Length: 18
Image (cartoon, helix red, strand yellow):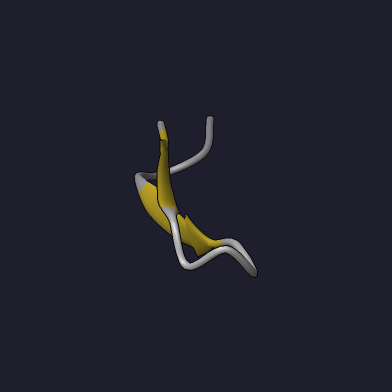
């Protein structure tokens, strides 16, 4: 299982991965 991490895209948007 992956812990909650935040990925920042070039666009500057953030995606929450659980």
